[in-house]
Amino acid sequence: MSSNSFIHSLFNEYKNYKDEYLASDFNNHSTIVKRLTELKANSIFKIEKIGYSVEHREIYSVVFGTGKTNILAWSQMHGDEPTATSALFDLLNFFSTDGQFNSVKENLLKNITFHFIPMLNPDGAEKFRRENAFNIDLNRDALKKQSYESNLLWLYAEKIKPEFGFNLHDQNSYYTAGKINTPTAISLLAPPVNHVKSINYTREKSMQLILKINETLSLFIPNCIARYKDDFEPRAFGDNLMKSGISIVLIESGFCRNDVKKEFVRKLNFIALISAFGSIVSKDYEKFEHTNYFDIPENEELLFDLLLRNLTLNYNGRKFKIDIGIKREKSLDLNSQSFTYTGKISELGDLSIFYGIEEYDFSDFEVRPLGKLAAEEKADFNILKDGRIHKKIINGFIIDEFK
Image 1 (cartoon, rainbow, N blue to C red):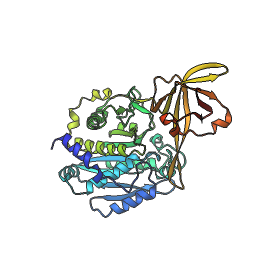
Image 2: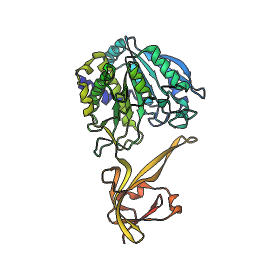
Image 3: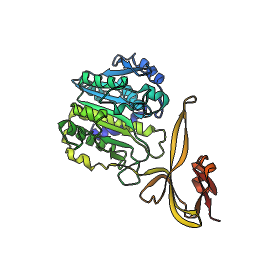
Image 4: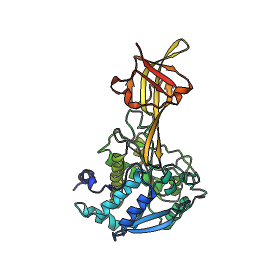
């Protein structure tokens, strides 16, 4: 079976490996612990408690495979970025399930020893926030390592000395793959090792492996893959682990239209990682010219959740043509463990270089400032569909159809 045939077959059979117990948009610590406890029954996995969070929640590693090449993958160092955590459990199902891909799995397990750390930041995950319990961003703590979780990750990497590391994150829905109206589904980065963005052998391998991932994912999401901004961040784990000699690949789970819960993006993570693992074993990533990495379009923050174009602003007796860009703030109700969304005006004026996940031409509408009371109202996107809007208050403005 050719590489592309295998990937297409795996893509079609993903449903057989998806961990249905885990959601793609939110999982708490107890959910992860329950799944790890169940996986202990499978002799392929060695599951160890490797430390604790600030609030004393257990952090685990899952080790499997017998190969000489060590690979480290960690997820949810930002507590509100859960997509890849669920994808890692999908991979655990893949490696522990008999089926048509047994020969592929056996080859990977024979050549690689996998180390997964799902949910590095369980305290942040519990509250669905980026930082840990005392508001430290773990990905800005690679130098001082003040947090238990940061120190744990660094010591683990030092101990196993992986050849490759996969730093798994989520990014928001406002990025495009270049200057086009296409949301970034996946963005990729080979982190720099210094401010001048030098390319040593370690980083070159990361770039080549990213080109392999890009080639694979382009079979399913052409024009939806971007290169994450590569400014050197001296406090970040990716940059520092790369400096230590580990080839790091950052994978950011982005957004696809009609995929609010990120189920499809989770599937893309699964496919990307299997493709990368296979390439590491075969070393076919070496066929790529690393400089082609820079041909991947850069992430551009050019999207709004809702973009209203060509409104007339009626202000102090004068009329101006403006666009309004609205973004939705996502918040978790911890009691019900459900999300609510609040629409707020993010920007207004000439937004001709931007795009909307939803867009409407409001040439026949005007907008007028209303004052403080209106600012407390919430935007209801549904009434903007099918021309049903006649009058709506959004974030301190009233949108009113011309009569």
